[in-house]
Amino acid sequence: MDKQFKGFGLTISHVSALSGGLTNACLKVEAKEGSFVWRPISLQAKILGADRAKEHEILQALSDESFSPNVYGENEEGILVEWLEGEVIALDKAQDVAVDLLCSVHQISLDKLSEQIKNKPMSLKDRIIDYWNSITPENQTPEMEAYFEYFSQQDEQAFFSHCLCHYDIGAYNIVVKEDGYGLIDWEYASMGDPSQDLTSMIIANQFDMDDVISLYCQKRRLNIDEWKRAVIHWTPWVTFMGALWFSLGYQLLKNTCYQELAEREMCKLIKLLPSIHK
Image (cartoon, rainbow, N blue to C red; front, side, top):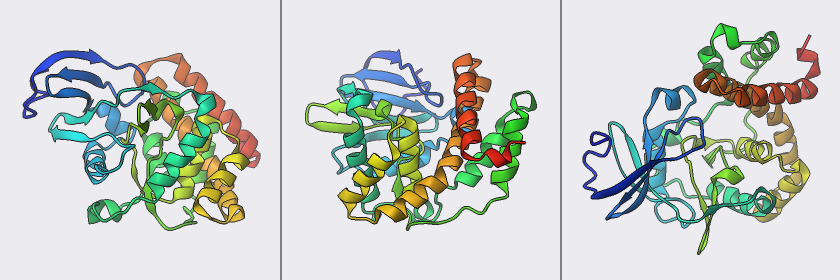
């Protein structure tokens, strides 16, 4: 414990484990200096694609944004991030707020980001390949293998100019604060095609696709038809990536809930691309 918080200069009064999330194993740290979330660097986080160094830099770049938590510092064990006071938003109240936050993220100035981050966008294809290679053979089903072979041979199409993307705007990551809304868990944040981020948000929350695309495009004065084509294109990609993520969750935690969620996503994928499933 002492090693984790080395170098932060905190007068700690209480540390408690936070529940939820596969990559996290996060802790709430209460100290004289304030309340924080400890986000460790772990093998589990790395397997699932979380990058604490990138998360730290992106949060630093967002220090002037009201919706993002401030980052307090980092060491070789992890990063320390501001605890946002408030409650997680209810899913039935999340849609408009989530779209507003997504628009805000996609329009952030990139001036404060390093060239390394700006020049290394998120690749759904690479993430799918990484997840697949981390799943042990006994957890690889024939259906998953067939779809992996399909996606690994596809070119990843670029629809729109890259911008900063969060890649996990679920209601579970939106905090209702006294003065607005906060967006937490930036561990997957990266440069990327904003239509991928929009697709991920729709799927994560099971929002109505047409409603959300229309709302997003109205707010940003974009062409709805173009964005709908992009979301339809990415939906099988994101669905399969989610299935692999849940499968890895089952492998790492042995929780059958994740296995059931992986099977649910595979059922969706088979309906989206039935010709791949033979």
